[in-house]
Length: 106
Image: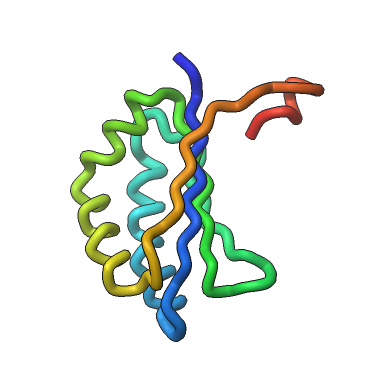
């Protein structure tokens, strides 16, 4: 099984940044307890604080698929409708460990 890395780029409506972060935080905390979650981290774009980036690393596609069935993911979907200016851009990827194996993948 190959690890899966997910990058979700979230463009938040003006004035909704704090609400977005407050709504995402419990999802992050619960996701950290899921089997197969290696990392699930929220970032902010340096040049635009209304652009949030979730970077996730999962042990397998099966673990990621199970994550999507969690009840708090439905809550996150409802929150997105309230605070996001547009549909999130979600990228699913598999690492290509070039160079130093310790540094070539997330």
